[in-house]
Length: 129
Image (cartoon, rainbow, N blue to C red; front, side, top):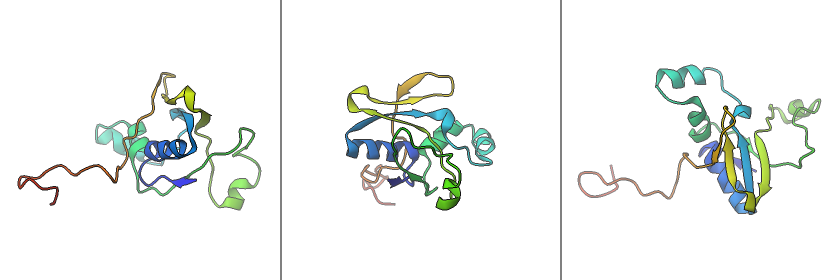
């Protein structure tokens, strides 16, 4: 289990890397927050990229056995939150993929926050403000 504060795609990749697994994420199954499509559209951005790369949403991401039913009666109430199945874990040799809304499969990349990325240099040649 991992929180998605660094972005769903980035944290999913952290999870499967630590587990030695592959993954197929289904973009059409990502929960769409109210107002996000409109806000992304006004900004000229792709809502899916915001859902995959945005952070600070503090959702939890976890894996479960294939027979796990996130819609089991009472489960969401017991946990106090809705659950969504957004993909499947694969053998590492099968790779790490995202299936877009049009059904096209492409490599899963991490557009989210990277704590270890060097800050760009400013006009004084430092990475500071």
